Length: 274
Image (tube, rainbow, N blue to C red):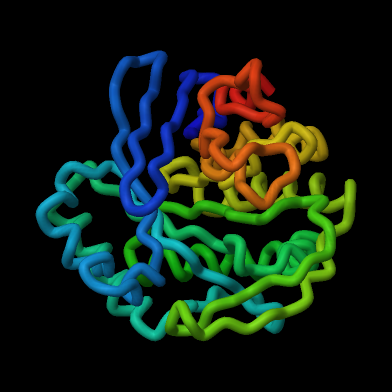
């Protein structure tokens, strides 16, 4: 679900989350059509693998493409490519911008495989935020990218084990994530967004990938985040899973409304009202 950050338009996003997403801005009754390009899709078995060249026939129909994911290091806060083909893929995807004026390319920084602890360390100091922002701008300029999605899972997140892939989807290693500092990080994050907007300006796109769950959203001053971003990308996929104790095996994956017969407490409609 895509929610607007600024009070200009109300919006919703229906996420089909593999390659293409449909964005609907209700207030102006026009569509934004876009999607995520997951760099690990190249390693799927045929016929399900996906490469930038697969977009040749449909790129003209897209407004947004979000490349996922890029990470950053804690030495100098430079951005890190996460796959050996990222450089080639980003150059190919950026090339669409030359002939397609409505096509916007973004990178997603973070994701489920990136430790929340690293974001927590970066946002805490003025100097580290400034270094990160400077490196984001350099990266966008280098590849001709229109904006950035910050995909922090999430300020106030608890310790956990993060499973990271390297180069092939089967090459996985586990790292300890000590989580973030609550509630301080939620406000340091606000500083990051303001400073990022100050440096990139309003010609660049800034979006946030956020949790759909009320207990997470209410830990952060999200209405203030909205002052500095263009869109919220609310992760409305996976409200219910068989592994959770509040869900039936056949519960809707992304329910529009809460069912009166299901113990599952979340829905897209409920998230939109927060």
